[in-house]
Length: 504
Image (cartoon, rainbow, N blue to C red; front, top):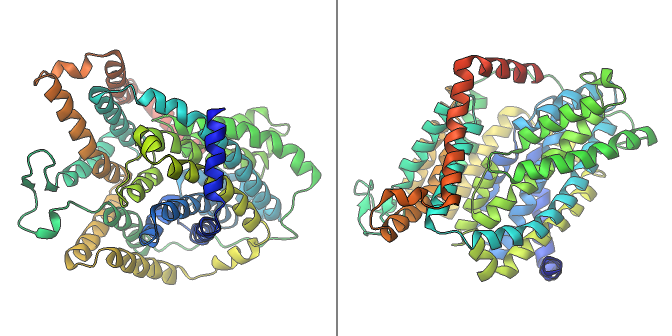
């Protein structure tokens, strides 16, 4: 009942005319950029992060939430029509959706993706609203040791989840942790790794790093590869679903929602895991399993619902514990920090109106998106005809102007270019970029909690495993590192990799 009352208060904030305008602008921008080929939600959010800088915190974060949901919606369009998923979570949508488009059923594919995303987003946001207060109550009982262990778990899971190699993921993480050391030491006041550059005293700007790695690095990577597009498949008929399509889709939407949300809320979860699991489930339960791989509508409905439910699920650890478990969540955390706000249990106490207004605005943004996506799908499709060299040149220009507008400085411009080249190099050699951003954001927080725990214990390192919660969290983190090594050593890892390759 308490959660319901708080959600109603949040709706009163979200229904303010200016807040509604910010949400509308956010979902429109998110959809427009998310529809463009090869651009996933993480790149969309990173690219539009500077746009929200000049607003007040409430308007900015609500616009940011709209951009996040809009980017998730827009990604399905390119997957279905161009067979170009913007992120790994959209691969399954591309498998079945593009086959439907080749058969002239692009309309029903786009419709089931949009409606499934709406259903999943609505249910998952309500689950977020009712689950978040319970997680906050639990988080308020945690001390420095438990928080440090929780962050170690986040470091390990993010590093192990992204990329093909846990070692490469950990290497990316340590690059981020090294960048987090730049600036003034919060405990001693000493300058660290600034090399006499005054602009580095405040540390590396998270916005600059995120835009450089995701937007600039991606643009460089696309420019370096000349690959002819598969071609866009035209929509024949209206973007509507027949009665048979509705009958085959609605159960998949529900199953996908309840598969995606808990997986997204777990530290080791993610939309890609949820979408593949949903696809496997739909294939086992399908009335016509022979259609899978040839354009089964359940293979679009279930994974798209799971994808969007997992996206809402990632907001549970982000808002309640301050832990980003995906690349997009890491950039959203940067959006909070640019206003001096730190997500976590105290945010629900000190800025309750802002948090619940944000959660309520997700419900409104979800309704706006389904209203925008179905009638205006023809407009979004025209964006796909933009030549790729114009598109990525525009991304470079927009990302540079946006970052420099927030912090006009030759040093900032130099770091933007330097980190952009680093992002391209990491993609070239198979190193994931998300752990770098996570390391930069969570590194100072983990250091602070570690120092507090050791100060309380007078330097006794055994204090880190002296409570059941911290010991369990550190053990789970160790298992995430050790188990893949054991599987690889015994040869089972190769089998699992082969199975994943077959699914792709």
